[in-house]
Amino acid sequence: MVASLHRSAPRGAPKPHGATTGEPTTPVIELSRVGKSYVLPAGAFRALNDVDLTARPGEFVAVVGRSGSGKSTLLNLIAGIDRPTEGEIRVGGVDIGTLGENELAAWRGRTVGLVFQFFQLLPTLTAIENVMIPMDFTNTYTSRERRARALGLLERMGVADQADKLPASLSGGQQQRVAIARALANDPPLLLADEPTGNLDSQTSDDVMDLFRDLASDGKTIVMVTHERGARSAVGRTITISDGHIVDDTDQEPVAASIGVAVNG
Image 1: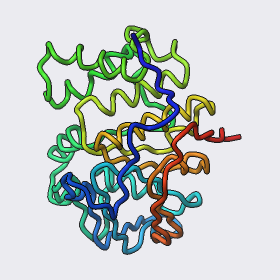
Image 2: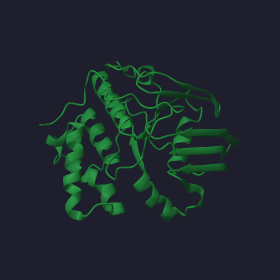
Image 3: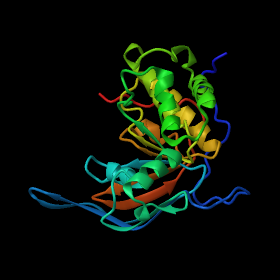
Image 4: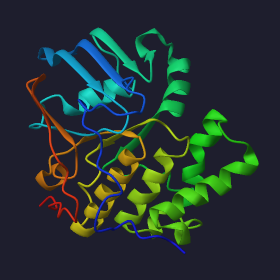
């Protein structure tokens, strides 16, 4: 039986970044004096300035700010998709600045799950084949284990009945659930989500936020860039960026019930 993603209360609130628990407290993310500049035709553009940031296991963090404030740049640097101009970034205990491109790609496949606003599923592969791709790339599971694991993840997302369908035949909400299953394929300690509810209806957005809270309660670290005010009520911590600087970093109690994320209009 496929479990619904929607629930009336979380199994446990994400741990705030100052909490003391019996679980390991080694940070999953550590940024020290990180800056990022780009050279554009109009001149140099400073996207991030002297950023210090730490996130620990079980945190669900929202990164908010105006367009162009540096939110997506921060996410790309943590994922190793882009490299900082200065400063040090450690994720899962690894100084990712010391990795070559091939090492970085292999590290990312094992350590980071990525979730995007527009899903980015491969259109010629079925849902279950999309979920299996990260496992194929990193060889973290045997060939025999991969399909069973992918099906189990799709079941957790509530879309196991869509496993053998192509993305074009799925709704936006179903595609995002498949994309989250793909992000979890290699059981990474860190999920990075860039506007994951921005292309979904409000009910599906609620379900995705509930799912993320469950994953944080299980010990995953989740960092989510969002413009949506409703989504912020689901997280345990909100970081505000303005003009490339972190200007606020606040712990909060996540709302336990349905959160009513507003749909972009």
